[in-house]
Length: 460
Image (cartoon, rainbow, N blue to C red; front, side):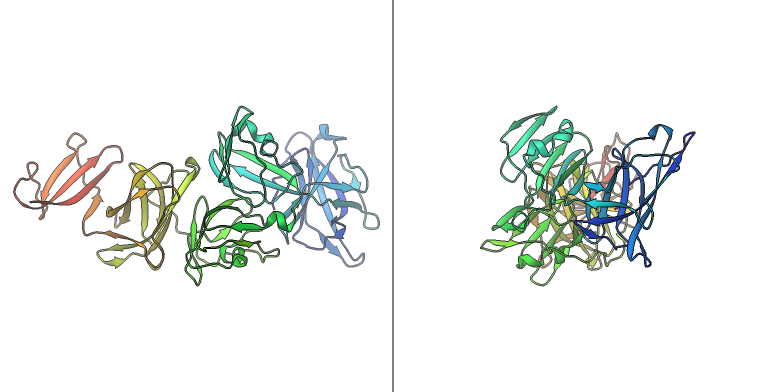
C-alpha cells in the first residue's frame, strides 16, 4: 500500500513529528512492512513503517507530518495498512487527540502516542469510464446498491447482477433494487472514472462462501491479496473443462493445470466462472496466501496493433488459438482481432504458438485475425462470429489460425481512387478483373485503415 503524499513547497512548510506505537484489533504491530499514514481529510500528509526497538521491546513509528501555516490546529487522522493480509484499516483511535502544530514532537519512547486500528477495513476500487467487472471484499452495514454507490452516483449509469439491474440518472435510481454481497460479480457502467470506497467488516465465512452451479457463474474475488488462479481456486476442486475469465484474460483447466492469459485474481475485480461439473460446488478462497510473484518473463509489448479500451463493452468472448505461418508454429507473433476496422484485442503468441484472446463486445459481428511478420500484415483465412460469453477453442482443440497460404495484407501503395487491382500469380498487374479461368491475386485498398487486403482468387 502506497499513499500519495504531496510535497509542500509553499512559502512555509512545517514538520510535525510523531513517535507512536500501533496495534490492530488489540495486537501490537511488529511487521516492518506495515504502513502507517496520517491524513488531513483525504489527503495524506506523511507515512512511515514500524521500527523495532529492543530496549523497549516494541515497534515504534517515527513519522514526519507536513503542512503549511494555515493547517495549524487541523485534526489529524490515521490509517494502517497490514502488509501480511493486504488489509487497510481506515478507522483508528488515538490515546489523545492530535492536531497539526508546527515544529512539535508528540510522544516519546517511554510514553508514545498509541494508535488502535478498529476492526473495519476499507475497499478502494477504481471504476473506469465505461464497463467495469467488480466485486466486494468489504461488507458495509448497509449493502443496498444505492447506498454502496451513493458517493459515486453522479457517475453511475448501470449496475448489473447476473439476473437483475438498476440504472442511475444524475443520482436518481430506477429499476429493481437489490443488495450487493461478497459472493457475486457486478458489471458497473460509469460515465467517468471514479474511486469507489467502501468501509466495513471482512464478513463471515458464510458471506465469503461461493456456490457454483453448472454453466456460467458471476463470482467475486473476496480475498484481500492477489494470488495465482491455481491457488485461489484450489478449494473448488477444479474439473476438466472449468474456465474462469475476467474483463481481460481467461484461464482453462485441462484436468491437470490452469492455462491461459489470466494468471492471477485481483481483489475487488469480478470474474465469470463456467463450471463443467454436473452438480453444485461450494468453496471459499484461502484465508492465508503467500505474496504473489509472477514466475514468467515480462509480457512483450504490442508494437503494431492498438486495441480499444476493454471498458467500452459490457461482455466478452474467449478464443484459444494456435498460430502457424506456412505450417510453421509462430512464437512471439503479434496477432490482432478486428471487428471491421476496430481492433478489439491483440496478443503475442507463447512458445508453443498459442494465443489467448479475450475479445470485448456486444452484439453479433464477424471477427478477423491479422498477424504482423517481417513488416507485412497477414490476414488469416479463418473468421469467427462474436457471441457474448462464447468459448472458441481449447488447449487440446485450439482454433487454427493459418497465415501465409491464402491471403495477406501488405504495404503495397494503392491510390485511394483505385481501390482494387488484379495480378496474375507471377505478380504482373492486369488491366482489370480477369475473366479467363485461373488463379489470380486481388488487392483491395481500405482507405479507413490504410491496409491493402490481398487474396488469392480462383476464377472458374
